[in-house]
Image (cartoon, rainbow, N blue to C red; front, side, top):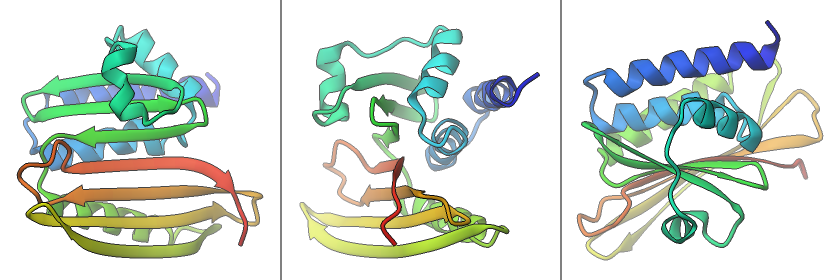
Length: 184
């Protein structure tokens, strides 16, 4: 079994466990983000192969438009007892996960601790870390971002989480990962 097949098996098992687990929306959100986006490195072909292999329904192009934000790609709805989510894979190898509702503090805490501990692994280089907050429509919009690379690779991972505490927001959490050129 090659690396890709192993990844597909692991991600498939993890997804099936997550779908039936009785977890809070924020834990489900971070579990799917890790299983689909982080483990695939945002590579669209891996995400598409896994989801099409499971027969996952796609949003229509019209429904996907707000999530694709002008990019070419595919969006899959995930509606489970934990909440409503949309997984997006774009042609420029960016993977994003949207959550309609989430415990923003819990998601931020998990996200930060996950990537901070990840950055301590051998050969992982944290190039940049940033956090900013601004007040919007009855809440706070928080963005946490990391730029990481493996060793002296020419490419880096741009990893971001944006949360909104506004109760009127259509999306309370958005996590993404994309491969970018390393300019550091």
